[in-house]
Image (cartoon, rainbow, N blue to C red; front, side, top):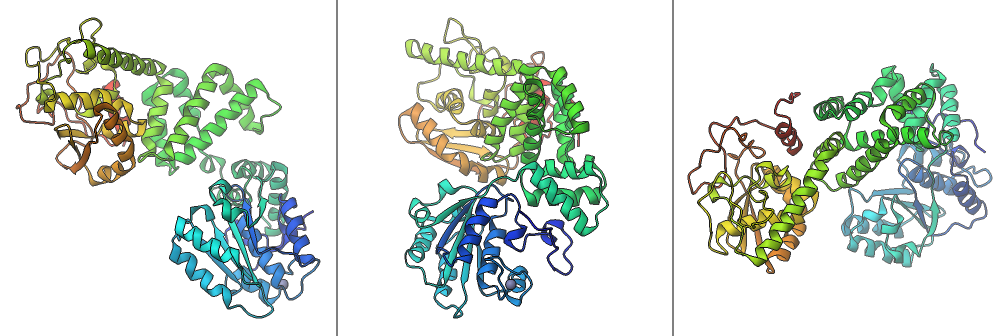
Length: 561
Ligand SMILES: [Zn+2]
């Protein structure tokens, strides 16, 4: 049961979520079980020395920790709750109280950070509780966790630790076992709706119910996000700006129009949407489209949206709706670790618009396997001459002009069409090794690694040392993330450790230069040149691998910039 929300006095602060941050247990919404446990503990003097607050972001974990500190130190507590007006409560609200120490482990996760705050734990003000709030505690380093554990094992009597985390499973079990675990939940839509209506009344906001409903939807179970969304809706005065619109994108996917799909994504990105946020909103919309097809009563799309999404369901059909959910869902997982999140999303959209592309890649895979089998029975397949080798990126594209994957149904040593005579390399030569790397190692790496490798060129490879070149320092830094996977794939193929050296050569094109069309055969490059950039090829400057992919598949595709 929540009291009407009263604005917290914070001069000059205008953001709704800060002005209406709950200041007492009675003002917390949607976490009744947590309030019951904590208020009961302060009322009966039974607080424990360490709490673990877990739950999704924006559900009130650190706010609740501050309220606990207030309730414990309040000059006029009422039934275990804080008054929120006494000097102690106000100081905690303003962040100036010495009784509350906060550490954000997402940015300060070292052992020194923990030691610095716990060192003060032993000096407390008599008669007062000192509350340490460690946010994102799962991000503490191993040694920092150990230092924290040490304090938790013998906590000073006036000290309480509140460890907050979105991921309790990543918290050391030894730490977890010393805490009382309270789980925060996403806040139900009607609870958020009540909260927003209360805030509307208290702040005298002139907004209609549709706007509040939209803010509730955008809040996705988080009071903070719902209030931020309401702020944004009020500031911009329109729903269009507060929520990405996917009609164009859905239309493009429905028509199988890859260029239009990529273009609408680019437009959304230019509106300032973050790629992960976009993917999440898109999946959320498509999920509603899906639910409206299979279980309309479960769907919570509202009013105008509902009608629109029902129509999209009819146009897309169930099978395609499910495919979009799966493909973008997978992309969201990959984006978490991808060096370039936009590329992952772009590739997902291309796959959705061009389902045949997946088959092409499967076919390529099959050919490589066949080539590999053939290689064990007969002399090694002929690679293209070193000079004519395309950049590594060519591997992940359709097989049309790919020398390694050239059609070889029967004879493993099928000639590379553009280089019929210059072959039969010595086994183990630089060239052969390079080909094995491109044909067998690269496909074994993760998609993210393959995307990155598309921008790389092999400078030399002698079997124990592989020198790869990328055009920018930024790309080189990103190679750190694929290092391990690449090493494993190399070892798998060559049965020996291979040193990988990355170099930066700004004279390389940002991504592989487009390959010539079949009607214009490649001009042979000088034999000692690794990087193929023919002077007469139109060099298209592209920003990302996916751009390159698109340009390649759709030579006429319009670039938007
Ligand atoms: Zn008070």
